[in-house]
Length: 338
Ligand code: PMP
Image (cartoon, helix red, strand yellow):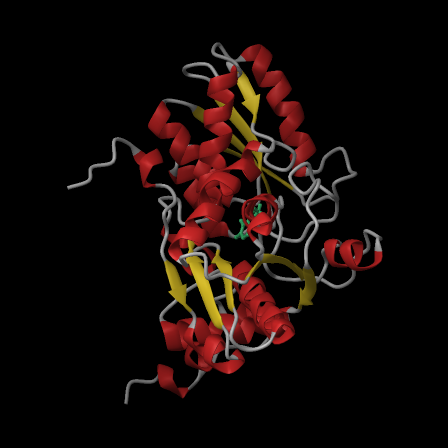
């Protein structure tokens, strides 16, 4: 019998699931790492745990202290849950454009939530900059002090994937893995897995949603973006601290029009109810499979659970408003009782 001594021990060691349709279509083995099975239902639990552990080890985070972060949601959920299990309070700054479900979950997890209008990174009121200033204030005013988790530039985030996600993929595939690909929010996942697996000969790819600037940067040397995406938690416009030193072997752009049918298929045919970034990742894995040719094994990330996007991605009215396809079973005659 194995008993975990706390929530932290239940983070990671997620299974790899064969994605049957895209594997059969491409002749490759496309495997999804089921990060939605983490306690906070996303890949970001790993980063949250490593950031907190690192801050405790350095003495920056003291017993009863406050963790402040700017986040699209999932990192905040991870920080709040892991923080609760260790006696820390959390204050989360989130762009108000993020899904209601993530905001509700953050409040449920005990976080104090500060909602701000979405602004570009260079704007002083961008959610990350706002969070950094708030952390500086709370460090002075809170009785047990406060830290800024700083997921974008704090490389404890990337280190989580160097030490856990990358090695898990290697062990779970018995070293029979040719490629890894995912999108970047902070870049911690892609750069961390790359640091672990590129030295073993695994090719690492970056899948960029529309509206992000990394594809143009790695392909043409220029941080330039066009278009937009409904995916949340990904789409980076700068080289974050976590992306520094990372060089992808393959880069591609994945549009929402390409990603959405994949997400709908994953639910309809494989029972996997996912969030939008997973569609970009699996779309990227399909492109990488086509580039590498049949017979290869490619791993990607199933980032977070779809119930977090019931009011957006899984809402026919939202999709129609955006001019995006609506899955037939959400809207079609199948809804009628026969
Ligand atoms: N998918 C979702 C849903 C996320 O919340 C995030 C992180 N913001 C990512 C993907 C990207 O992960 P990373 O920050 O490690 O690049």
